[in-house]
Image 1 (cartoon, rainbow, N blue to C red):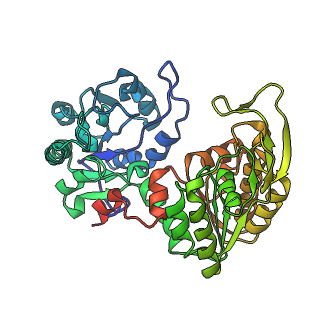
Image 2 (tube, one colour):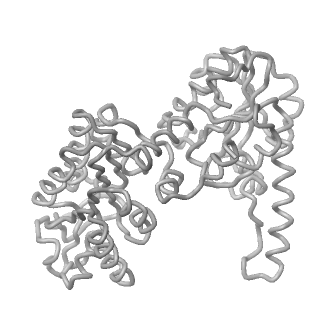
Image 3 (cartoon, rainbow, N blue to C red):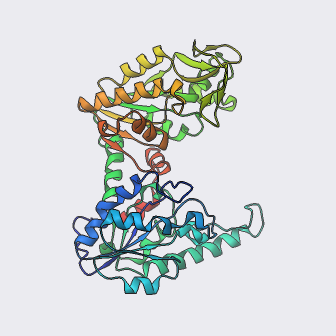
Length: 422
């Protein structure tokens, strides 16, 4: 069943959205992207003559009530965006009366799902090493099913539209689907777009396929890199992981970030790339600094900035961005691509002194997109780069899911998708 084909007239739909939006100290939304992303699905339900029961998490309350993470703070904003009355249930597990009173053409928003540990299904207050942990885990899984059953009892059908949590087998993202038959559970419009975007870069590939992997650590991206090495034509590796590769070849990297226990992994990546005929593109020079404050994303007073070869950085200097020759190399590798995946920045783009690498990558991706490439941007930092550089409308698709996108790219089955598709 697809949401386009489903008629919600006279039905109450419980919809898992991702309204984990950033708030300022006054509880005001600072970025409503995730709310806007869910609107097509919610508006379809209302327009059909149905009613929407909206459920989401916010932050990490760890199974406890935290007023600073209450979804009640955003009710008015959701009501305004949706254009219909939105009521609020202050306890997501005791919303039977509110759901029953809900009228067609209206919406009800439930309180933060993660106020209940049953949502994530993890035992609380007990270590994994404790002999009683497995028994506690079993009991929690049973409680999770009951929690999901309660949520399901509020509605006639279920819509999964929270790609950002699709990689988690939580009560509201996967377990709840067990309580609806195949004709009454479906992916929302946002989920359908996300799944299609991933399919475009993993299954429906138009070549050349170029992937750009940035970020600080090889270890956090190794699963993705290994999966991509069997699919891409070119793989650009940039950001902090550059220095682990330089070090693996005996290079001098000064004070740059490095994973000394992953030098063999870096060499294995190079070997696999060669065996698979993949062009591995690494930076050759770096913009370095003698004093960078990672806490405030700023250069300390009196600090110096200088460009070094990425394998010959002097002691006391920290590599923080791709140098001018690296930027040219990356742009040239992206030119002519027909499928592009970008995850992770090329440097500490939060500071204006070190934005050039990420900007060069972003602009090259945008240019290739303008020339016919399909470009998928995923991961919070890459999305932030596009926003900062004014490129959001110049790429094909920006994913709302960080961890979910990465696991999908790794080739893992997402529980939130599998629960619907079977």
